[in-house]
Length: 125
Ligand SMILES: [Zn+2]
Image (cartoon, rainbow, N blue to C red):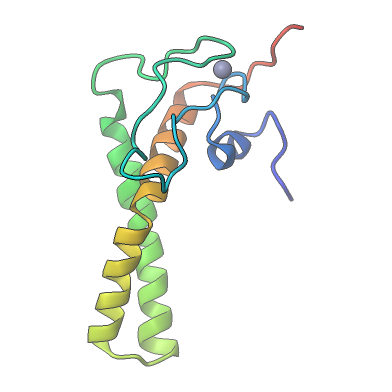
């Protein structure tokens, strides 16, 4: 069940261009300083422009909202109802999780959004 090249999940999980699935979308590793949001302007392999129009990634906020709400609800239900940790600890754990996963959620949201608009097209070599 590991996504292979050609699958959109491959692009999201590897942080690569949705079209050629080779060039990196983001410049640095997610937890390197505060540079997690810095993107390359275009793909180094197929030249796909990663910001095709101004404010393109505003729509990624909806993806981010959905992903984080689902994750926080799942964690909240487990901590509160299965482990019975109480509201304070559950709230603190969700808050810490939200802060800790910020770079990952930010990147996954943008990659999902980018993948909604561009399909895989193998390079002719
Ligand atoms: Zn590319």
